[in-house]
Image (cartoon, rainbow, N blue to C red; front, side, top):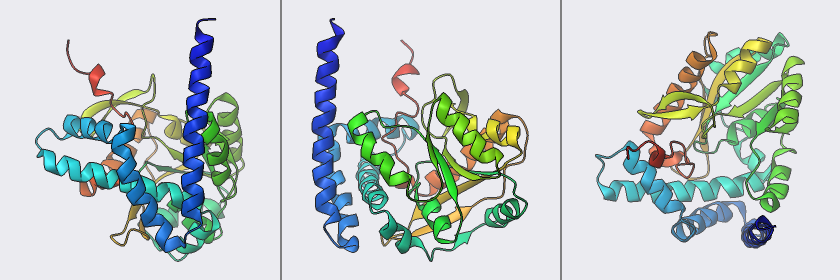
Length: 298
């Protein structure tokens, strides 16, 4: 019984936060596309300190880049919030977002490998991270006639998650929630020769302790496990936001060489690290990727 008031309080807090987010999204979506995207970037930049997210970003930047001057970390933290706001409203813009990125060219050898897999009716897994806009590659490929399924992690706020999921499903192909049933559905989709996308750069309880930006980070090897099980091509893909703040450069690397799951996941991690080191402000440092407080002695 003691947990019931806390549970009710949590649900009330989730409901309140969701209503505020809905109101903000409705206001932004009423604007022309070229205004709504920078508007949401600026809004999240202002709200991040109040929500505690800016402090979390700064803590993780200090953990990974202790030699950086604080002014640089603060500049990156503000840009991270701006990119997150833009990414959120782009996702909610649905078909408008797809139309905006439809002409984006995909660089790198991975596209040829993807085309070969599709022609052979062989499954493929596009592995990516929360960098730039992680949904952009799916929209770009959808505009080019691909059907792309996805495996996603539900939001911790169920009220927000209920409508966030609705932004994912209409894009292209089925989407599955992480968990036993979702993973089974995603696996069946791959087995049928489908192309799926999977993000791997969040804290994974019990995951392999793979070093990420120089520090060990528990990492799920699910993408590699599935690729090996179903003979799928495992192809890293990333969408870097261009300086105009509205368009993207999409890069698709060569497929990762099959091997053991940890080695394959290390290769995917290295591909993401390359992008983050070049433009650290485009990675979602909001995520507690390392939980540094657990790695400090004493």
